Image (cartoon, rainbow, N blue to C red):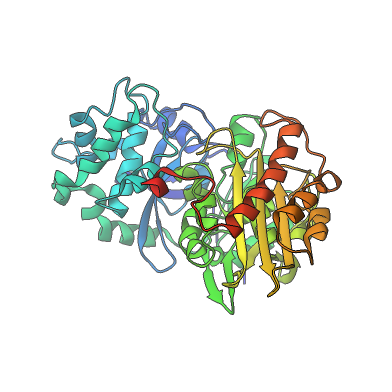
Length: 492
């Protein structure tokens, strides 16, 4: 059935309705706020989603009809992706009577700002945290601020401010709490079931009306750029100045489904890291710490696991872990669907088993049995918010006699695609799970990988790290002592 087409982008900025007809496909939210609306509290620092100075809140209706606000990086968020959303900038946080919001007042009282450039971003990240957890733990605060960088104040005054926010108590004037019911109604009114289509030719961009409409749009325009969270595509524009003809799919509820059935976690390709982490952490605990090391909170609120896979990057963080778990993909073109194993999706650098007009619709991840051992290790120059040098994922099944009954090892950053260590696996299979066996298998890495040297690591470093991660996995699966790498929270 044909859908209605609307040539107007509609969303709410702070308290006002916005309707735009002349919007370029690569127009970022940050540029529009600063240049068109003169809202200068939102800053540009890195233009790649790393520093957090551009943080704003985006409120969106959930599939269940609720309203959630999340911090996002305005510098890499495209304006066209905001149809039907509520954008909140730092200018909207203070009460209408001129008094500062508790988040702002705490930052003042606890000296959480010096030069002030990064302060609005910190305020917005803490505001999002405070709405979700009014009395957060130190770990929650630090996780929420992973994507906000400050080089003046140091983080301790900001942490003290974060701990004190709820003690101010005047939440009855908070704009996003007092107006929530009204805002839900306003956002629902914006949902007219229409496809948004603006521009022509290479300047055209589309927001599909629903999943079936997306399938039809992509089948008709297979060279279009599918944009879910724009955590990668945003950099194509801001850093590489590439032109895009986007199809924005972040608002498609059908791609947000998460289910657990018959020992398999299934989620739509549009599920963000933030939306997936609770379910995946519960059923596959090793994936939780991995997800919290993917970008900052703003990136995790935007980026999707489906996008991380579809992108095909050799250093994508989730594919090696999901390959080790023997995950599979549902691919769709028009009304046709097919399912393939994830490891078969990656063919060569920049090439995936995806036909023109076909897209990743869903991901299925088997849950390891209680007797299986599974671990993921990410190696970077800094612990948080850094790109991967090498990532190793391991799943082990031992027989009753202590021999290796099944072993799956996958790496990122070691080849042109995420790849299994087939020769290493073969050397371990059927052998006793001992240090001698592991050390012998480590010599087989040269048959599986010939890593490159780049800005993240040298080839020699990657080769050595890959071997040592297998040894670490062995040590952690055979010892009851503390983990090899101890976090400050485990130590406490």
